[in-house]
Image 1 (cartoon, one colour):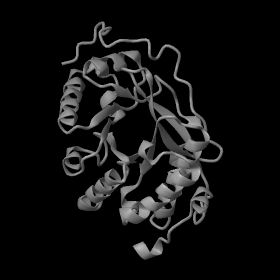
Image 2 (image 1 turned 30 degrees about the vertical axis):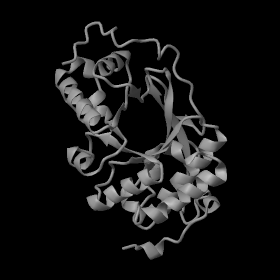
Image 3 (image 1 turned 45 degrees about the vertical axis):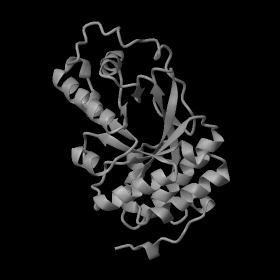
Length: 267
């Protein structure tokens, strides 16, 4: 069992170099687009091996003993690369909620990295990953509230899958809710998914949270989701993650309109 005393404050350079880990890694970036303005709203940083190995290979090396250092290294590497790539919009960083023992201490590394590498702190979004069950919801709420006080945005990632469900939404209020791709896939042909997503969009609107649809792969999915009131999208339809670089949006991806639904008839 680790405690807060096992986690000394780490410098940006230490984190960026993966010190304390027996492996190193880097980042790829995937855009989140805003259709109403036809621009990139944010880039999500995604862990990759040094030779572009997938995130799963990286996470195989993460355990209870190194989770905190890995989480801190992710933040610093993402901020450093974002600054080097001159990302002009939001930067979205996944974080492991169970690795944050005291938010006021854990955020220091992020703030220091933003200052050192010249990336505006107000353009950072922290995504709560659904890959692990949150051990203490009150603690998670405190993290989100502290980050909001610091001027950072927060998001629930992969909503509707794993541990990210309505109970989490009821307990933890974030600026953004990202709908899992399982809800998105072939939604233009699935009335049940259309009804569920329509309800979630209304709930999030009432809670003043923006909605991002993840995993959009086809124009038909995009049109159906637009007709349900969603404006922010992420997925291969727009761009695949680019290794240590910013991908171009696929040609023609913005050339669509919500009223061109054809046979799509959302509830």
